[in-house]
Image (cartoon, rainbow, N blue to C red):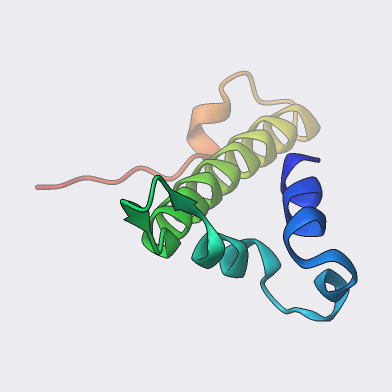
Length: 84
């Protein structure tokens, strides 16, 4: 809701015609004429939120699959990354 309110306040009726209004809104934000062009901050926030969203979805899918096939341990359906 905060994103939608910010985009509507910045762009008014133009919001529905823009492809990435949230990213473009960060270009207009200026904090005390010192912090400007905050698009990299928006990109990092978007990237981190996307990572956590995918992680939660994969976890829920593993738990649901374990419950569906009646396996006690859902960890057998999780991906394991090994460095060495």
